[in-house]
Length: 84
Image (cartoon, rainbow, N blue to C red; front, side):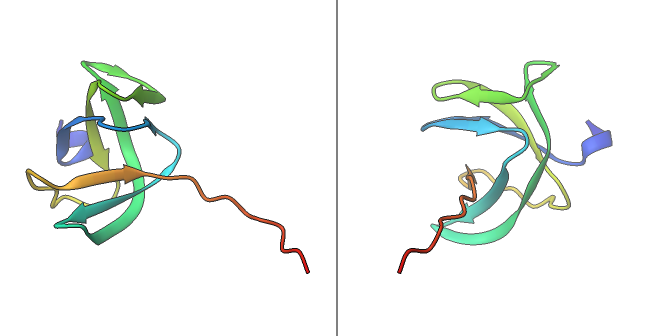
C-alpha cells in the first residue's frame, strides 16, 4: 500500500510480533536498522499482535529497504533495577 511505503510479507517463526514494540531488521545476522513498525496486518486487517506460525504484512516506519531473507525482530526494553 503506497500509504505505508514498502510492506514486507513475513512469517512469524518464534514468539510474537507486537505493533507497539520496537523492532530491528537483520541482514546476514547483522542489525542494519532499528526502529518501529508503521503497520502490522493480518490479511487486510490491522492487528496489534501476530503469533508464531502466522503470516503477516509488516511496514517498517522510515525504512524501505527490506529484502527477501532479512529478519525482522520485535523486542521489548525492560529496565532492571540495579542492586548493590
